Structures are given as C-alpha cells and as structure tokens.
Image (cartoon, rainbow, N blue to C red; front, top):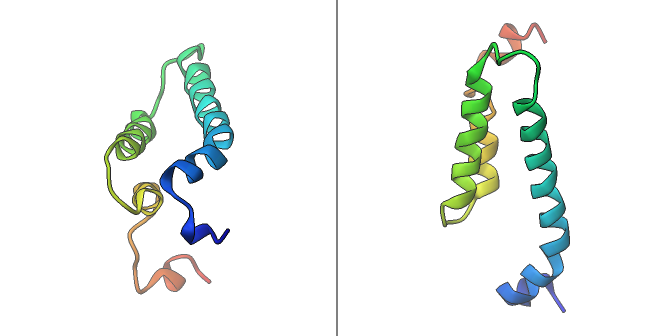
Length: 85
C-alpha cells in the first residue's frame, strides 16, 4: 500500500512503538536534567524545549518544521561571511 493511501489509524499503528520510544527518551533526558547536581546556568535552552513540547501539543501541519525553527538561527544573507566560509 502506498504511504499516501494509508489512513491516520494505519499510520498510528505503524508508528506507535517508535514514537513511544522517542517520547520516553525525551522524558528520561528531562529527568536527568532535573536530577543535576547544579541548577541550570542557562534556562533559555529549557524554555526552547518547553516551546517545542507545546508545539507538539498544538494541532496542525508542519510540527517538525516549526520545532526545527525554534532551534535554528534566523536566516541571514551574509551567513557565509559571518561564519567565515
């Protein structure tokens, strides 16, 4: 069956174990951060993670793109000069 022809239920059934594993991995990482011996020096990164999790909870297309943009720099035409490439 062509992937484009699958129902949402079929996609969920095919993806459930992989998605579950990734969610558990994220949760475990956040737990390790919470158990850290020292408090966070930069809370900005955690705010970005919270924004990403909130993005996952909002319905709509392009969640992956929206999350990628949260973690990305804004595009600059002069990036080659700025990065000395």
